[in-house]
Length: 81
Ligand SMILES: [Zn+2]
Image 1 (cartoon, rainbow, N blue to C red):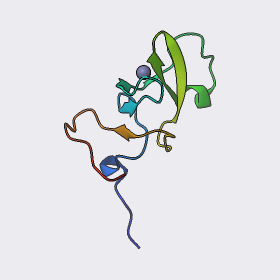
Image 2 (spheres, helix red, strand yellow; image 1 turned 90 degrees about the vertical axis):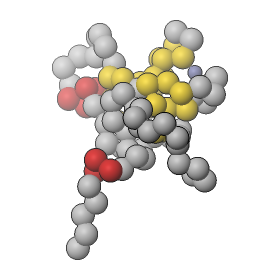
Image 3 (tube, protein in one colour; image 1 turned 45 degrees about the vertical axis):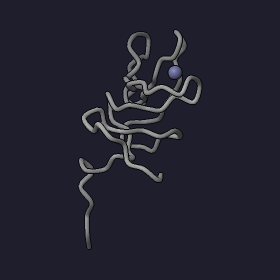
Image 4 (cartoon, protein in one colour; image 1 turned 90 degrees about the horizontal axis):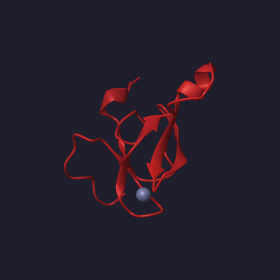
C-alpha cells in the first residue's frame, strides 16, 4: 500500500500558499484568520485570502481548495489542471 507524502502535494491547502482569485484573477496568499476567530480548533484550520479588503474562505488546512492553488516556492505553476 502506497502512502503519498502530503508534503509533495500541491493541491492541498497550506498556510501561505497562493490561490488564484476568482474575483480579480491574481494570486493571493492564503492565511489563517487573524483576530476574533475564537478558540475552536476548526477555526484555526481555516484559511482565507483577502482581495480588495474583503476576506474569502479558501478552505481548511490540508483540504482541497475550490480554486487553483500553488505553492509559493514554485515559480511556474503546473499546466493543464
Ligand atoms: Zn483578488
